[in-house]
Image 1 (cartoon, helix red, strand yellow):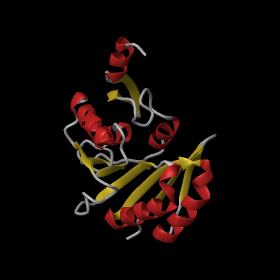
Image 2 (cartoon, helix red, strand yellow):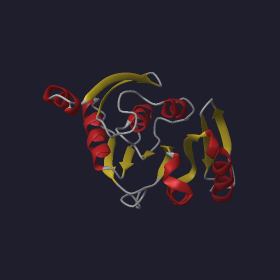
Image 3 (spheres, rainbow, N blue to C red):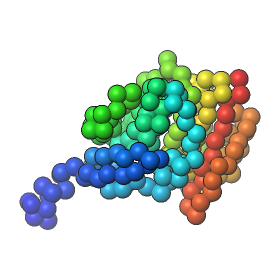
Image 4 (cartoon, one colour):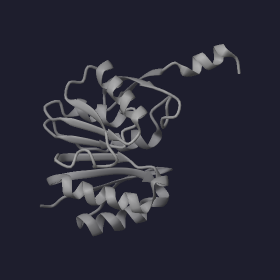
Length: 195
């Protein structure tokens, strides 16, 4: 590979997208999930999340921030927190928050909920990769339940092969489960913290 080609690969990937009628500019880079476009699962998730203007939101495993930035725009009087365990993802989420001039969002380095145990949320959303495994997903769902306010909602999108597992774990942890949409490859599910 030529030096010129290498230097081109080192430059940010920049693109604009419209998500939930919000036009956003994203900077991304190789090594982050879906660096050149918003993936199908995140699009499906965002199209089925119900957000109130005052909601405090969490994007769990934010990558470069498409879900979290959209939530922040949909809840302008709330606060949106984006977390990821990958420092490169957090660097790009912060860059995208600044690029899009979103004052009610912040991105924090956190392994799941470890850095945000003191916060409570109305909405938690996540595009969970199947490769994280059932153990880590179980921890995420337990922590989500503990950190949601009463009436708070957890939204996840997963590959269709995990939908039965998600249904079972949501019913165990939250006592309820709603399948909001099953597409060709992905399923969007929601659980509500009843009290």
